[in-house]
Length: 447
Image 1: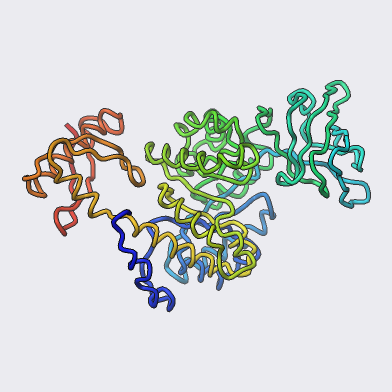
Image 2: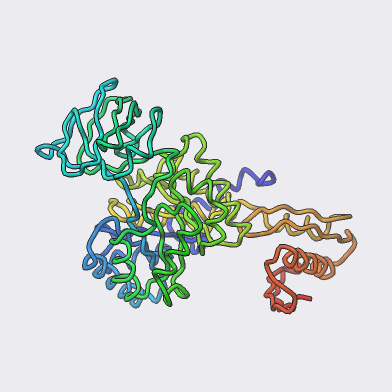
């Protein structure tokens, strides 16, 4: 990227402004469907704008609601001739606060003490609130923190009474708390099932009959979670891909074993951002994408990518940079949530995200990398630069022809792949490379 001419930044502005850019991003676009994007006309617009995967969020909506949306999507695919994969995103296990007296939000003041009870029948007030996790008094300890309502409320644990099923806390900030708000327990290993009964009903009662393509699993915490889900799927596990969402510290610790078992991965930065320090989210994202690239498994980057476009026709500069940097990190897909599900500009959001991806992809000088790799004198060294390319060491001559150098690198690549157990002798490998300006596809038998 250091060799990019600054004039390139201003190039093609007329084409981009007029909407005449016919380029298609290599990065795939995942769009969450909802009230703003479930009609046939709007779905046709999203497909033409670049939607590759439709996400059905089962944290909201009934089976009947999602069925109508899916039927409309398939009609839109038929009308446009554009294919789109279908993703079911499970609600997953969760911890929520309880109901409140009169159903009205309560004010929690910084420094005040409050009791949290696991008796979910109790209607809360300023002195006591309920929480749905029965093992809360056993799992948390004084000094731990409970985060409520997307992290807007922080409760410091003072004492626990397992017999009474209560936890005494101190409010760390002043805020309003409504009913049924989500909760996070940073650093706590929670004892919750991989799939809730609702998740099983959603998958087996809706997903399987509708021949969905993939399931995004919320709050995956260990590799065995994937084994459990495949057992639930039974014979259908062969055709439905599993995408893991790591959303707490336990999942981060067990990331490598989760990656071994999963078919794909989602960097879900929402809940994860409440489980780990906010200043470390970028590092977690880069690490996860890098490891997915090495393993050759698709990875989606999600949450708040163009969130301001829920209300605005243009993203913030930080959001545009966030999307581009995810592409440069090596993500295979980027995802829209509220922007496409409930936003005022779903089609515009998809178009802008596609354009950002195209520009990010074009900023890498692939030709220079290729030439440097095949014509450098002595050992040619190349590190992982983009989606699934594996670092390897190959020897070549600066005087070798493009064809000869390519053969050397191809031989070294196959040798490296065997050593990394990506393939074995006798396997047939499809190699895609370039000699000069000609693109070449070659079928090789591993020796």
